[in-house]
Length: 197
Length: 197
Image (tube, each protein chain N blue to C red):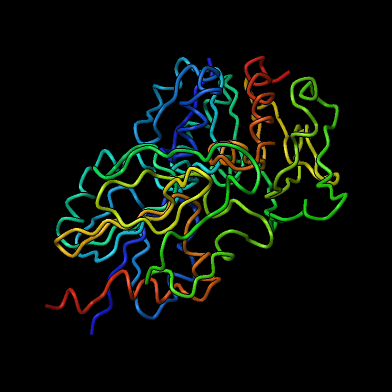
């Protein structure tokens, strides 16, 4: 069961409640109404792009336990999971919003081959903006890299799993801005629904 | 003379924009959105990242406008939190024509703000607006976008001296700041002489 938190922003609304992606989410919980009970039935918790990290910081014990006890937590871009989960080393970067104006420009975002995500997501849909990279700790493996630096990784923790990315497709899709992000979600969400193989 | 007090309803992990807090003609209160007291605010600024569901649930923004407050709304309306707001309509079609911002008539709030500043950010279109929040009757429409002339910026005055200013796009502060027009915008949207009577 895929449960999403909803920060009440317009881009969360478009991503989580409107077609084409609403059917991917079995439950959508407004962040102000969230209680730990909401995780009882969840196998995967989706924290959408740019959900305010200040609201997640008080949930640190609950979210840590959710993973340890067998849940999969998916932290999307600009939610700053390094502030509300242990064991994440993130490096924010200055974002170029204009990189593609140069002919032949490339953000060098590539699959690592460590998962089957390339069977779901089109490589041409990987590049819009970069917001940061990670230094991986023990047990963490890169699934996507930009110029060789991790931007999507996963880790087995206890009986569960953490998946985190610095990419922010929900924000852009939800803002009607940058069509690659819609194409990314067209592959990424089915990948999650399949258990993120 | 006391400066108008602007309440910045912050729903991010970062501070209000320095370009705003540095303005000499405002007293800016950068406060977390949830539970923020509206008392004493001359201007309420709702950023694009606001939790609109929370604003709709609290239900007191209309009353603020009716008692003389200027309400500035950014972003796409998903959860109407003022009776004059209805959901965002994206500009249909692709390319520059769909994203072309036009000024219906000169307006004091945008004196000396070149349309090109709104249409292009370092040569990239679409940052300012990608659709409109429909304007109610009685509103002064300032900017539209695309061939359907969807309403991007509009101002709805209230007999109390309050007003609703709506910008259907990314936060308006950086655009005005780049044009050197941010201070003047607030001088004009809150004409203190009208309130000192």
